[in-house]
Length: 332
View 1 (cartoon, rainbow, N blue to C red):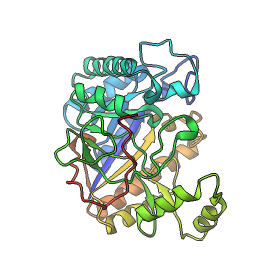
View 2 (cartoon, rainbow, N blue to C red):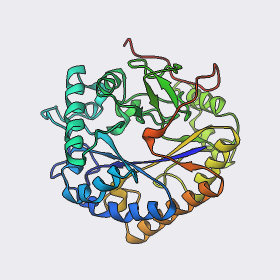
View 3 (cartoon, helix red, strand yellow):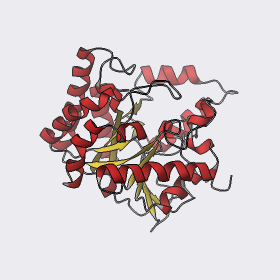
């Protein structure tokens, strides 16, 4: 099994279309990078437009990136990536809702800025707010990206005007744009979902049950809560922002037992500076956050899990019925 750590390295402002964009959290990247180096892991930093313009971040990561101690990738927030002028509506914070040409223009502009600032063309991408789709993948393919990591496994963002990934599992797979949900042997790119999974049972069956239980006409959400409380239906996000240390370790163990080949731990860089996100409000919270990250990494290393960069992900050939995937929406 391989461990990938992906960090949404983004501006301080938590809400899309905020005014007064700040990048103070860039000063904290050196702290967490030292932690990664001490623990023997190489992280992937997925960088937005404002952060790419911050000299502190470039000073911290440019040489490390060139030496292979980390990876610098792309994280496109539509509301901060030129050309600007998008109407500030919630749906416009999702790349997948923008016109195809505008999507390509924004991604290309950010790609070129990161290449200029860090000296190497990025090869890994994540859409802001997980707003991924066929138009995004087409733009990435034209720029020779190798890996996309915009899918959050088993998660439905439709209430936020985004995609529904509720039937897409955490298994990495190869695909060819624009067929973003269709595993394809020899595909042009690799999809490396952000890891979400279950502590017990068959992941695909658990996901289908949850997908069904959340339908408005069924209204079984209370049942999901009861099963979760009884540890019969434990859906865990592999992030120190969303899960306890114990649950993250449990998920890693669960996935290793089931033969998954990759885990993708993720978080947002503003959580490194107290007060910027709901997850880390005080210095004590930040200390706990970093300690949780350190403990989970050490557990993974003890289990023989090898840390790699996102761009080094090699997805296995697809196996029929091995995992649930969302229907292909490339024709929509």
